[in-house]
Length: 91
Image 1 (cartoon, helix red, strand yellow):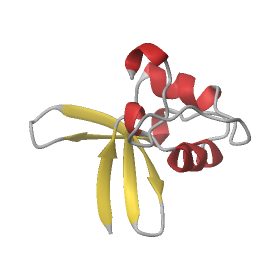
Image 2 (cartoon, rainbow, N blue to C red):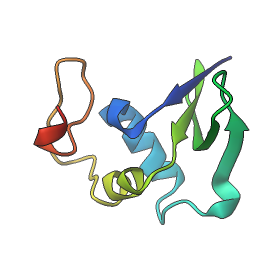
Image 3 (cartoon, rainbow, N blue to C red):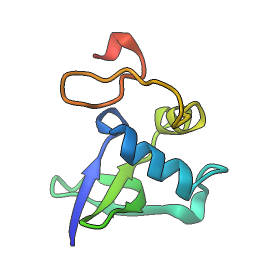
C-alpha cells in the first residue's frame, strides 16, 4: 500500500471528508504520527486510509480550521488541480 504525505493545501473534498469522519471531534496528541522525511525534517501528521493508499496529512492550525469548518454537504471551492481553496488568497 502506498504512503502519501499530503499538506492541507492539497486536500481533496473526498480526503477531507474521510478525515472528518475519522476524527469527528478533532484529532488529539495520540493520533499524531511523528517522523523524519527524506530531507531530515520532522513531520507531524494524522493518518487516513483509503482502499489503495495511506495518507499522512501534515498537522497544522490550518488543517484543524479546515476540518472544523468542513461540511461534506456544502459546496466547496476547488482550484484547477481539484484541491480545496481555504482562503482565496492562497490559490
